[in-house]
Image 1 (spheres, rainbow, N blue to C red):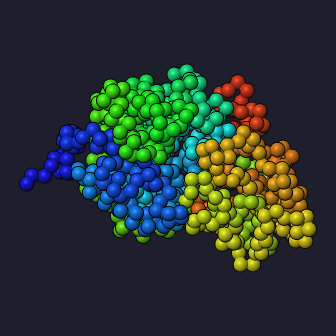
Image 2: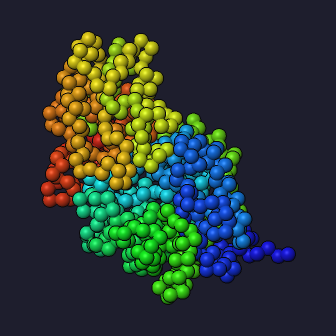
Length: 610
């Protein structure tokens, strides 16, 4: 019996797509357009529903190691392969700074820190490590990279952006080449590409303008001219499409009052037709629901939302879906002529094109041979290098002729203080094991305090207290203090706030320490925060460490002098909150530290540029 064309890996992808679509019922086609959460489906539903993919975000259970992810992923795939046509699943997660949802993986710095490195070669090595650790657990789709150009640091997803400069964002988008692999020169323009089993499907997000909303409001409105949208916020997508990115995620935000999930001109006329993107467009989580104020995912309002989004160009719907009702609802929309069958076919063609390009039909299951690479020494050394290169030295000495850094490893006694000095969860930030992140030993890694103890000499006494009292400061003769403070973890609308300040009690503690001991202040933040002049004057050294991830020893590598600082600010650092938004070229551009600023141990100093 001759093999069906779509099952033959030697058949051209477009022929496989056409052959499979010709065999599909309308219900099966619509099933391919769904990516529900794992809690929405049973194995029976996966078998009977012809589901396109699963959002595997939270894994098999909380804080699960990658081996257990692999077991669950294989179970899901086995169920899907028992469907009539045997179409495997796309299994997606937000692998945005490593395979960060699973316990024990390598957690790299968040994007804002990577933007400070300006190092495209490094980020390609990070992408390769991320892909390997994800594939070990059966994950074949990473919702990454975020190529937002942040224009207001009040946006609480600022840390997901590489920079306020679209050129840097475009440069760092080269992570796509390592997530997906390097395509041959003759690969058709705009068509998806995945090199093999060591790679994953990538996703450029969030299209488009998510970093430019008024007031930095999350899911807000980007009110600018089309020319500015094109030259600033759309520019990185050209880099992504040139690297054959497989998918693009629509933004929750709006453009000049119209929600992106219903913006046919931008999603279809521009992205698909003008830019030639041949992969699929996926909604953000419940992004279709957000098209109406009433987010009833089962009622009449959802029917309107679905028609708006899919007709605008959304191909795959990501969300908490009731699969049966989703399929029935979309079938009724097609039968009523409210969604053309040609739009359904186009969406499914794009989804299947990606599945075939990614080799998921040939290799649907996890690759257990990769499990030993999860959190391995090589990957952690790569993350440590990324931390080193991401650090930005903002001040070194009250007198430039008398710098505090590099610190003395052989000092007799040193003080370590601050809320972030011994908190791995704070150090990693959000999207680490859980969505919003947490405090404490949330995964395997090295805190700043751990790293200090490993770095200093055997005769050095390290005294740690989060908030040292005056009595503690008076009772010891400290050579210097390292104080690490910053923001707690937050994601999307969680802890959204306009006041980017160090809390008053922490600021008082920093000043108290700095009044008595030469002090290095390390800021663990996802964006610039307001630094009061009186505190800045008191401290001796200031380092922006961003959200460095699991390898805290990358910080000690530099502050103790084994490596020099190379990081430069990826965003402008404001003086006062009332200056925001602040970007180079503005008439009243008066930052505390300009975009591109970064000191080094050598006499050379970079003050601007990319």
